[in-house]
Image (cartoon, rainbow, N blue to C red; front, side, top):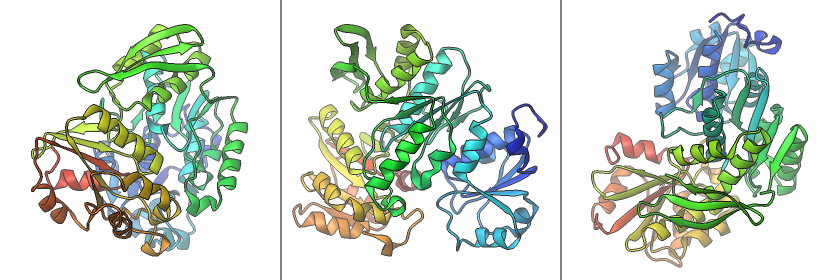
Length: 440
């Protein structure tokens, strides 16, 4: 496809023909890289580790460097930087020294989304990924072939993107570094707002102001449930979620889903309200809900050769953690719950320390794995080992593990049939488990 394709507007033509991504293995960055390649750009990128996103990029014919490649950076007309790439990164320093045009991930996402007639953007502290995927599923079943940019990997095909048509662009809208202010949604969703990303916002007041700016940039805003509620929420024998949607005294539909967490009733309501604003019939929405297979690491039951019941969940904020733990207790009442939490960033653990302690101090066996630092350094906050020691003051079963080998040795001593392992966090622990053949 030529760079002169109808998808490419004036702003994107200014990028040149060769685009290089720093932090290309990030779930959002990798999706954007594929979209740029589809538009006719020569695309490459750098990342420090090989993960599922990198494997998808390689399958799509995109070259990924794992160390500084001055030649590839020199050839680029434009460089795209993830928020995790700091100014002292060698790749970024070299790009600056070469005078390269540098855009943030948020700026590029805004430009790509502007190529579509209607942008549907999902913001909020929790539930963004699943709500985004649900909206996409509804639009797909409505036959409009939307384009998708997702902050996770769909269980259905393992991908975090869909290259669809020009009418609808469905995306997550991340508030970190005000990235979502580059979007101009036709319909926006704000699922909820809690104290988060204080390393950037500094105060909750600043965070709320950014969300208000985001809403003002939208033609229509879905915020709150607008009188729609979920009733008779329960699980089937396999953990599948069952409920009814009601508007006042009128029942809209009965729903029987493949996914488990009760919080998904809220995500479904948001998706339903968006769909109704777009004129989609209830029968299509119901079908989409019931065909939805979910997003990976969102309370995902995974195969493990060592234990009968293992769940991976992306929860990394205390509110999300509490909901995942509550769901596990409801579904697996007769088993002992063992949680293994990998904190995501040192600053989040520090800023929400009391809430983290509240979640874990009463659990039967709370285990902690080395913090996923992402863009940070230990001095930026509190690490997993310190969190574990704080929990241990009230719960002698709390333990910290620095690496997979020590964690595996401990888990091997547990009764595999009577245990539910719940791996929690937004870090690299699931990848570590797969690489060591703990998960299939």
